[in-house]
Image (cartoon, rainbow, N blue to C red; front, side, top):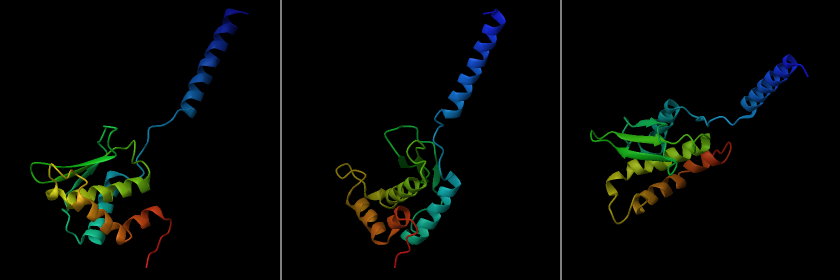
Length: 148
């Protein structure tokens, strides 16, 4: 085989390999909802399920990179809450919305935490049960749910 033919075959195989690996390579998970959309849902949830008792100036983003967490909530020194989503786990819209409710209960019950009870204490559990009793999770988990 001539050198020119070998080079053309090699280049053709390299191009085919590159095309196939790009075409079928897994793409990084992208959030179904943008941080802006999550902020809008947070406001709607605050009104619908929390009677606007949660702070309105909560910062929401996709900046959680520790794969131990789907999301985290923290309170900055200035009193502002920050909900930090992990895009690896919350790319699906339903998961992101459920997680937003979960983290909203952390904000609602923030001052009830203590060393003995932990973050998912009775107050937090009560908050989640209240959300469930008001149908919050049904609207996320059941397609086209229109509760009574």
